[in-house]
Image (tube, each protein chain N blue to C red):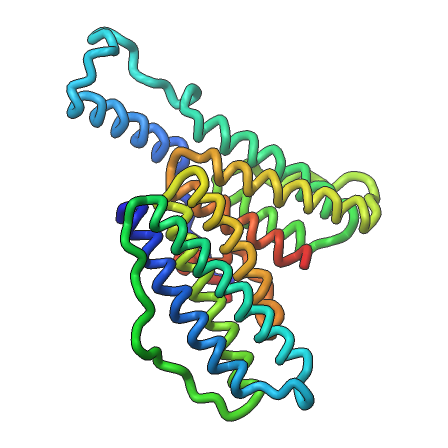
Length: 143
Length: 140
């Protein structure tokens, strides 16, 4: 996979993350579950920022940034536990995507990917995730 | 914990990487190197040097964590050392304070990030980045 392809894949992932976090925010109550609401809001903001950074990185690599899809599949959200689980799985998916981006890039894009991988791994903990031995590396699964 | 695959035969893989680089140079028709130039040796491979430095950092962190009684943290470092095919654990020494261990972990996390940035192998960079994320989770 070329560096540009890897950046585009990560950007597509961030488009999806922004969409899903928007849906999660819409199913989270600031009064009933303030900590979860704050975590979801912070994650939404963080993923929007990553999306913008990746868009810039794709342009720097002389690519045409992939657009967001018209719609994304959102998991069933009937309780705060569902929201936590969806967010946790989303962060794990992002960590895996950024781990591949690390492998496919060098220099500034790799620095971006390492930071994003670290952020996703830490953010996962806000949604009842547990520390892992190798975040983002499915072949070392210890979850 | 299920067995984690090793970065597999670190030195072998890195040596193969050196061979691939040499082959690529031939394909590109690069004539800047004299035909009789000696092949790269494993010890001169930048990633081999990098991994040795990371292993030393991990071993120090493991020893400190063991000495301070942070068994789970030491186990994390041991798993990372094994993934890089590092040496057996050494007994923990001293009774470092929690603050000292935290400072050491923060330093290790930065070292892993820097090592990931410097790695020439994408696979090694990915593994080191994951290790930095694992340490970041413990610091969170």
